[in-house]
Image (cartoon, rainbow, N blue to C red; front, side, top):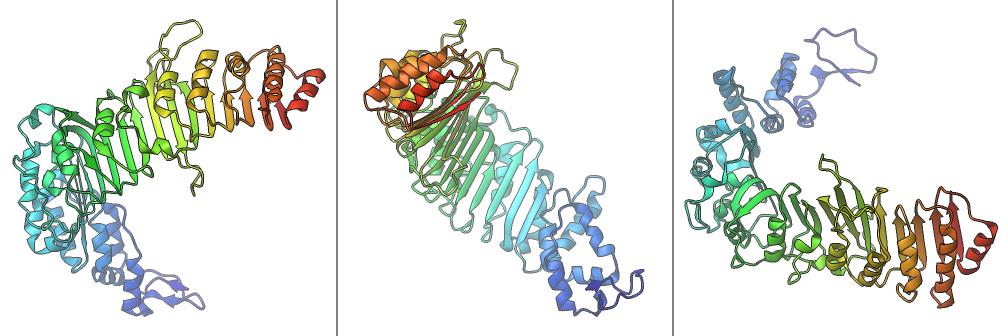
Length: 496
C-alpha cells in the first residue's frame, strides 16, 4: 500500500504502507504517466506537494496530454495563460504534440516553430471566421511531418457567397501535399477550412460538416485519397453540382455516413451518383422529406443491396411539429455478421407522408421501398407500422411480395392485417418459401376466420407455415379455429 508523502499533513503511518516519497523517482514518473487530465483545473495536481510538483514537471506524457485539454488559454488572463502554455509545451520535450486551441490562438503555432516537427494532433475551433484567412495561416506553417490528426471547426460557418471565387486550382491548389503531411490519417473540418491539397493519399478518415462547398472541388479532392476507410458528410451542402464532376472510387471504404436530415435529397443523390464503394461498406444516411426512389439512382444501385439478407422497416410519428408526418427507418443486416445488432445499412427518412385511412395523403413510401430496396437476397423482413393511422392495402402487400420474393420470415405490426391476409390469399403462390409469420394487429376477433382460411389455402398448395406467432388483444381464438390452425401450422403461438 502506498500512502501520501511526508511533506503533506499525513496521519500516522499505516502498518505495511510505503510513503510516496520513499518510492524511486522513476516509479513515481511511471505512476503519473498513467494520469490523464480532462480539464484545465487538473493543473492542481502540481500543487499537492513539492514531490508531486517535481515529479509531474518531469513527466512529459502528462503535459503532452494536458495540452489537449480545452480552454487552457482564457481571455481574462490571456498574457499569463500564454506564458504557461509555452512552459507546458517545453515540458513535453520529445513527446508527440497534441494541441487543442481556440481559433483566435492559432497564431501561437508560429511561436513554437521548433516544436512543430512533432505536432501529431491539432484541434482548433472558431466562433466565426473568414475561410481564406485561416487557410493561408495554416498553409504558412509549412511542412508538418508528424501530423496525424487535424480537426478544424466553426460554430457559424461562412455563407455560400464567401466561396463563389474558390476553384479547384485557386488559392490552395489541388495537388496533394503528401510530402508536407506524410502522416496525416484523420481530417475533420468545416468546408470553411477544407483545403484540397491537404487531402493526401495517407488519409484514412475524413469528416466534413456544416457549411458549403463546391461539389467539383470535393470530388477532385476525393480522388487523391483512394485508401480512405471512413467518410462522413454532415450537412456539407454542395453548390454547382454537375454530372461532369469526377467519378470517385473508394475500394477500401468501410464506413459511409451521410447526415442531411434537414435538407433536400440533392446532396445524398449526388454522392450516390459520383462515389463508388464496395458492398461491405457500412452505410448510414439521414435524409429529409423525400422518397427513397429520389435518392438512390437507378443507374448506380447501391452495391450493399445485393448482399443484405434481413430488413427491419419501421414507420413512427415524426418528432417535430409538422402535422400528419412520419419517420421511416430502414435497417439492413447481413447473415453471418459478428455484431448482429449493428446494421450494415441504416437509413432514416424524416417527415414522410403516408396514405391514411381517410385518404388525407396521396403518397405512400412503399413504392420507394420496393423500387429501391427490393432484392431476392432478403429472406427476413420486419415491417412495423407504429401508428394506428397507418395502413396498407392488399395491392401494397402484393408489391412488397414482388420486391422480396425469397422471404422465409415475415414479421408485421399493423393496425389492420386485412390487406395482408387478402394478398396472401389471392396470391397464394407468392412467397412460396415463407415458413415463419409473426403478426401483431388491432383487428377484432372476426379476423381469426380470415387468418385460418388464408393459411389453409397456402398449405393446400404446399406453402404451409412452420411457425405462426399471432398477437391480438381483441379476444381469444375459438377452440374450433385453433384446432384448424394447428392442422396446417407446425407451431402456433398466440398472445392475447
